[in-house]
Image 1: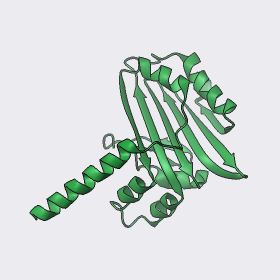
Image 2: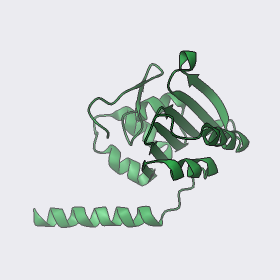
Image 3: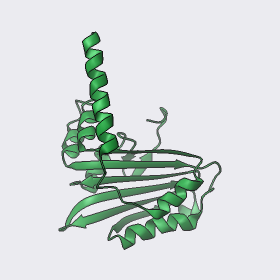
Image 4: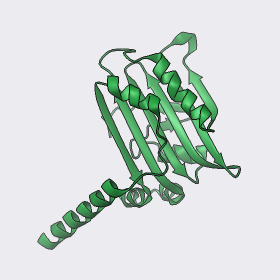
Length: 185
């Protein structure tokens, strides 16, 4: 049993070392996101490369759809920014993030806002490479939280639903974000 722990610690250290050395090629550098980070009261951000995703997917061995989708994904970046008060971030800065995607050659394929100016909005952006989707970005805006999820690799918007509930990506059913009632993942 002791050798198992040593092996596990070695594997964890090797993965952490690789993670710190890896330069994510799929992550878009957004100045607007940096500005939002400055005013956030808490941040949870991480990037997983392909090998980390494969390793993490082994924790759900019965989910064939998840493994099929991960085979084509080269990386995932998740940015969860929380703010102290409701609507306590500059909407102009949020508009800057959207403008940066637009000027970076991304295509906005969905913009959902709540009826009558209610809380929240969801944007779905894609980047095409030779008429195939190479990147997907989802921007979820709530009263006191902004989430940005970027997925790079060969993936379809439908495949994104299989990633929901894993790796910090909210579970989406029928185009509606399903709240996590069991606590944050």
